Image (tube, rainbow, N blue to C red):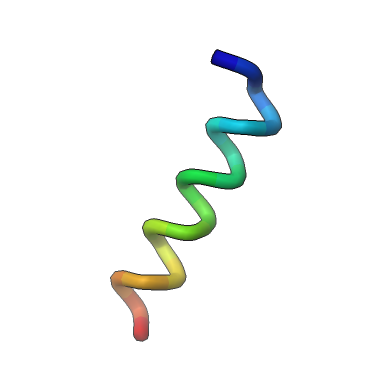
Length: 19
């Protein structure tokens, strides 16, 4: 898994969780 990919997924999950 690429680091950028993991960061993107984490960011999306965090954003979804906050929303």
